[in-house]
Structures are given as C-alpha cells and as structure tokens.
Amino acid sequence: MNGPTATKPPSTSVGDYLKAIWEVGGSGAASTTDVADRLSVASASVTNMFARLQEMGLAKYERYRGASLTERGREEALRLVRRHRLLETFLLEHLGYSWQEVHEEAERLEHAVSDGFTERLAAFLGHPDQDPHGAPIPAADGTLAAEESFPLDEVPVGDCVRISRVKHEDAAVLSFLGERELVPGRLVEVKEVRALDGVVTVEDEDGVLHSLGRPLVDLIFVRGVAADVN
Amino acid sequence: MNGPTATKPPSTSVGDYLKAIWEVGGSGAASTTDVADRLSVASASVTNMFARLQEMGLAKYERYRGASLTERGREEALRLVRRHRLLETFLLEHLGYSWQEVHEEAERLEHAVSDGFTERLAAFLGHPDQDPHGAPIPAADGTLAAEESFPLDEVPVGDCVRISRVKHEDAAVLSFLGERELVPGRLVEVKEVRALDGVVTVEDEDGVLHSLGRPLVDLIFVRGVAADVN
DNA sequence: TTTTACTATTAGGCATGGCTAAGAGTAAAT
DNA sequence: ATTTACTCTTAGCCATGCCTAATAGTAAAA
Ligand SMILES: [Mn+2]
Ligand SMILES: [Mn+2]
Ligand SMILES: [Mn+2]
Ligand SMILES: [Mn+2]
Image 1 (cartoon, rainbow over the protein chains, first blue to last red):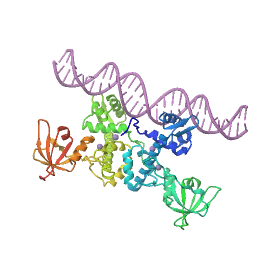
Image 2 (image 1 turned 90 degrees about the horizontal axis):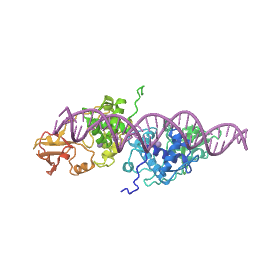
Image 3 (image 1 turned 30 degrees about the vertical axis):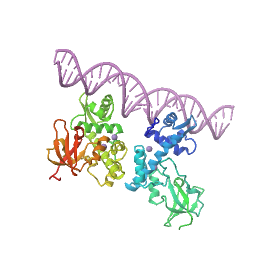
Image 4 (image 1 turned 60 degrees about the horizontal axis):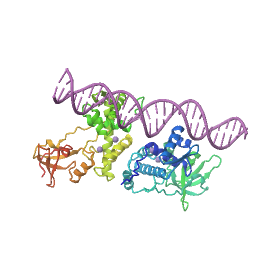
C-alpha cells in the first residue's frame, strides 16, 4: 500500500511543533518566541526544531523571520488536530470527562492513535464536525471548514448571537464558563461593550447577566442568529 | 495529593521493558537475550536498560544473571498490563477491530492514557475481568487473579474442555484460530494427543475436527468443564 | 545615525535509548 | 582440565530533544 515514499508518523515533539506553528502562525510565519511560549520550551529549542522541520520538508524557515508550514507540514498538523478534536469529543461524550479535563488527555493521545483508530472513532461518534469547544474538526482528507464566527467584542450592542466557539486549554477558564453555561450553542444578547476596559455584558437565555473581562471575551466567538430569542 | 515521593510515569521504553521482564521472567529472573528477542532490540541495549532499571529501583539486576522486578517494578508492569487489556477489549467490542488487530494499537496506547482514562474506560466497559484473548485483567489495586487454566496438550484424550485463553500477538495465528472459532469460551473435546509430533486433534461444538501442530497447541490454554457437551 | 530593547541564534551540555564490534564470562562437552 | 559455543557486557557511537549562557541581529526610539 505504501510506495517508496513510505512516511513514518512524526514524533510527539515534531507533531506538537507543527500544530503550534499552525495555530500561532495563521497564514504567515510563526515566530520563535510565540512557539516557545505556546509549547513552554526555551526559544533555543525552537530555533533548533525549526531547522530540523525545514530539513524534513515540513516547514520553510528563514533565520530571524520565523517558520511557516509546507503543504506536507500542514497536512500533518491537520491530521493531529482532527485526532485531537475527535478524542476530546469522545472523552466528553462517552467517558464522562468534564469540559476542562479533555484537552490534556487528548494532547497525549493524539500522538498514539493510528489512522485506523481515528477513522473508527469518527464512525463511532457519528462523524461529528465540531468538537466540544465548538472548533471545527478537519475532515479525513485534510479539508477544514471555514469558520464564520467572529469575536464577541465585535457584536453591536443589542444583537443576539449564538456562542459558537470557546478557545480553550485553560482549565480554570473552562470551569468558569462551563459553570455559567456560556458554552457553544448557547444564545446570548449583548447588552454592553465598554471600550474603556473591554468588559462585555451579555444576557443569557435565562435572563441572567454576565460581565466578562477582556481575557475571557477574547476567547469567545459567536455567530449571528436570525432573530432575538429573549 | 502527591507527597514528596511524586512518581512520574515510566517512559514508553521503560514500561515495555518492565512488561517484558514480567512476561518472560515468570517468578524468577529474565535473561538479556529473552528480553532482547521479545522487544526486538539488541542485547547490549537490554544490558544497559537492566542497569538503569536497577538504579530507578524498578528491578534487581545481577550481571550475567538477569533481572527481576522489584515490588514497584511489578506494580508498574501490572498497571500497563491492565491498560493494555482494557484497551484491547474496547477496540474489539466498540470500535470494530478484529481479534488480530487490537494488540499493536494497545501496545502504543497503554503508554499514553492516564490513570483517570483507564478507570473511566473500565467503567465504560462494565469492569471486565478478562480481555478478548481470555487473559485476566489486573485490578486497579494491582491484584491479578490466579489463572487456573492449563495447556491444551495436557488434557487427557476424551476430555471436554473450554478454551479459556489464547496467547496472542501474532496476527497470522490469531486470524487462523479466529476463522475456526477456536477462541476463549469455546468448548472442544480432545480426540488425540500425538506424542510423536505434538499434534492435537480436537472436535468443536459443531462436530468439526481441527488438527493443530505444536506451535499452535502451545498457545491454547483450557479449563475443565463438568460434563461432556457434544 | 546611534542607542536601546528585544528577539533570535550559536555553542556547549545533558538525558534517553537505540546501534555495532570487540571481548569477557559461563557452562556444557570433550 | 580444556575446548567450545553461547551469552552477556563493555566501549564507543549516533539521533532526538531538551537546557543555559553567551552572542548576534533587528527594529524602534532618541
Ligand atoms: Mn484541546
Ligand atoms: Mn500533543
Ligand atoms: Mn495484547
Ligand atoms: Mn507498549
């Protein structure tokens, strides 16, 4: 089945660097410092890995300019992201994990499961297209649905929106939002966006008001809804 | 929760060596060569690891005499065996893996799952005490039920026995036995045990005869049953 | 244009876990 | 008691990834 280009899966480290470059770099290049911060490693380690990824054909690296993924690098990154998000879905929906516990476990398991496992798990889950945080799950062929959500602080006051995604990974943040049911799928009406300190106040479906500081607001993404639901 | 003796989980390599010593050594010591063969590594690598396991307090090692597990080493080994067997059960019963595919996947996953995952999976599976090959699953507290099965070739001719375990890991062997339904739980009557070449002939529940050469016979373990069922 | 403040790279180490080749130990056969 | 056939260890090497400390590059401010 594998021709002369038989490709062994990247190591845990290499995989996590690819994901970090993908997450941090957006369309352009990822800087040494940003990747170092995200992975909690020394920046010298990142410089070293950037050079190695270049040699492996997974990234393009220019000294002092950062690294960006090649097509192969992007494919590997998305394969891991697919696994990660499917695993989080499984842990939450079938093993009774809480919203804030799933990430750490998925971060390790994503490197240990095979393609076969991944696709059987996807079937077991009914081929979901979103994970528990509202993040889109890349398809098996590497396609990633474009996101049409936008940041909560860009919503005009008075508009009613549906929370579509909460950028996660911090357990304390997830606990806080989870307890208040500010989770994907929830409808909220934006009552105030205060320019001064960035605090956004929303009213949820039960009429409860929530005032959220900038660090929280930045994690919440929403989609417009046709009509006001309150 | 973790006192001053906070113990980090063993690496994949260390864990696999501990399992190998446990499997190969029985009650006594495991030899360099036996472990090397089982793990497909050079014997020099094993000598090196034996010394490291000794330093880590996981094994007792005497040069030229082999290694045996300490209490802590045995605990780590059994923790991995528990995970391995629970994972195989999950893969087979819920993800549609075949009998011969589960081992390889479990061999990797056993090192990536947490204790929390393991216990939630056990609950999800209904706390099974056997894996798909009939091997006993160690309890969460490290207890391992004594096996009361014995080798197929020790059965007196004419006796009816239940297959209780098939020592696995070779996909071709498992395919062969799986196709003939010579799997744990199956009843067979021993029709002939030929001393000359070790071939054993059994009749299964459907009256079909199977003649098995020594390499296969050695993998099959059975338990007595009260009465003849044919 | 020169400082200055970051940011990034280089240099040198360390731990883990593999390998091969060479030599030493063990134990059975002679 | 030797020889012989293995088995096991030692020595030396390599790749992967991480670290710190020192140095160099970049770009904004002065
Ligand atoms: Mn996550
Ligand atoms: Mn990861
Ligand atoms: Mn197995
Ligand atoms: Mn393993």
